[in-house]
Length: 289
Image (tube, rainbow, N blue to C red; front, side, top):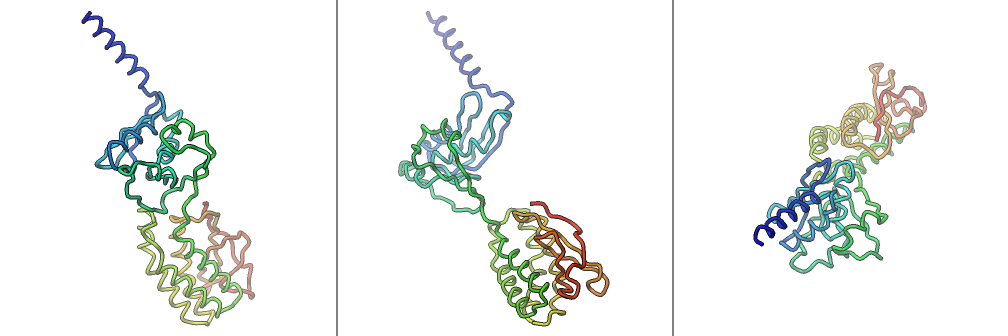
């Protein structure tokens, strides 16, 4: 009888192992916020998908080790399920109603961050553990965070437009907006790579923006716009806009040395000569979104 029980136990273990085995396995680690053992159960249950995905969450480090079939699913799907269960993670913020349904001991301190996408819930959907299999079939649109440098770029293009119109007063005003946007830029919202390039060019951008805002003479403004545009281009190559940007070149600007500028439109509109030679130049490079 004892031997039979051992055989049954071995068979059961073998069957479970077969069921648990994941083909084409890929392993990744992601931070998922939570408090306790109950959170561990919920997080791992939300991540689990038979033969496709599983997770092991560490209560102390808040790190989950995800193992999944790389040909059948991905981390986005897994992390969305976890968010729908009420747990914020590196990529998705849980719907407020899902978080509110967690027991008091499981309601961790939420870390607000614009680097995360926000999962918008379907209000008709039950937001608890039982939704783990249905959440992927729910139509969800994740809202991407705003570009943290958008105000800087907007001000730069407004300044460029003022120079194309030979308007020194407007250029001075737009340069002030640019200077303030550079100063106020929320660096904590930049990625590591973005932060490095921003720290390299921030003072250079501020220097030229300050000089342009301090005068209303277009010729002097254009002298500083040359360096401003070169440095802005280096920044924009790393911190890209959500649209295509053209890097234009005029061979006659800067006393025949040539000068560049950034534009949102492909047709040339020259900020160095304005009405005098508005279409002088060509597209030198393109920054693809």
